[in-house]
Amino acid sequence: MAVEIRLVESDSDLMKFIKFQWKVYKNDPYWVPPLLMDRKKILNKKKNPFFQHASADYFLAYKDGQIVGRIAAIKNDLHNKIHEDKTGFFGFFECLNDQEVANALFDKAADWLRTRGLTSMMGPANPSSNDEWGMLLEGFDDEPRILMTYNPKYYLDLCDNYGLKKAKDLNAYSLDSDKVLGSDKLARVAELARKRANVTIKELDMKNFEKELAKVKDVYNKAWEKNWGFVPMTEAELDAMAEDLKQLVEPSLVLFAEVEGETIGFSLTMLDYNQVFKKMNGRLFPWAYKLWTEKKNISWARVITLGLVPEYQKRGLDAVFYWEIVNRARKIGILRGEASWILEDNAMMNRGAEVMNGDLYKKYRIYEKAL
Image 1 (cartoon, one colour):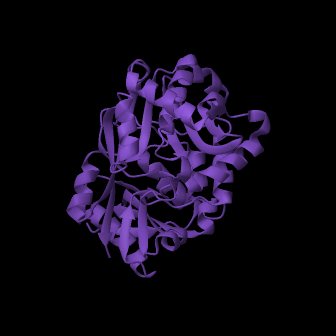
Image 2 (image 1 turned 45 degrees about the vertical axis):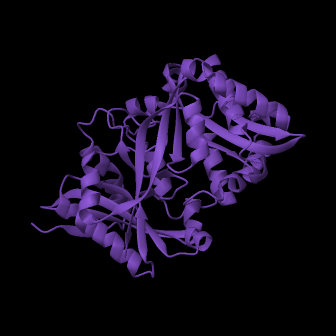
Image 3 (image 1 turned 60 degrees about the vertical axis):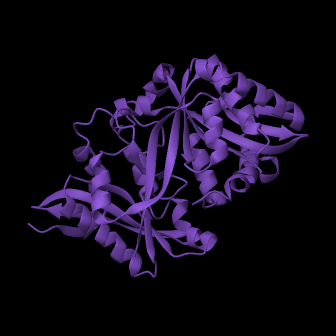
């Protein structure tokens, strides 16, 4: 029977779009169900500030009357303004192992983008490079860390067979605190860089959260502006991100680097709440009251962002951050970490992970196709 693609038009359709993941991953021991309320917030075009500079439509694929796939087509005007191109995106892709269905979904997203004047399609972006980004390429025998993607291995075949090509790969390194702190080179580089720059590391002051957020805003877009695929976050997006993460952050793992009172770097490391979310199966309630008691069982953390303003880059200060992060995590009982994601050709950051005796244990792929 032919594949039918339907536009998501109602709240009921949107919930079907969200819950389809449970059908794909029902027998997958490594999948971590997203919180339903979080997915609804991300996909809400009226409330998510991303859609102040972007537009999107969501589609469901039906076959024999059953939902068999989903996809989003996304036009990010800010990306195209920054990069001076005409790139559109696909995201939130999920599909049963059926090439006909995958082709129909990709065709729908491509047609949607093409009619809006875009000349290439890239993804998956959920919904942008500032959110969940990329398709798991290697490392299928492990659960994803917080805010990282996960997908069945056959998705790679669905993408390849459709004609999607590699745009860029992203690396994720596993860190063991004993191995990191056992690196004489890291200790030496960190101490030397700290003294040369006269840098001070301070942790997040929750009592002055708004002032701390202002420092993040000052550093964030400067630090990553030259990275491939980077799109700056608007003030509204940074506010929304801070509001979402405020209840989950571990202050001792949110660090600022200062030189003579000026903030020159920032790093955000989160406890891997996926270890808790997996038990919740998408429902905040009745689990909400248990969230903090379950926190003590978390054994991983993820280094999500680590950046320095341009004039302080390539001075070894990333080593200072890593040294501080691992030591502080160890004090609260976190002995394992992930540094992700890192562009495959970001030599400085990949070298830093290797100096820490990190293990390159996962890779993710960004695909592209000319329209």
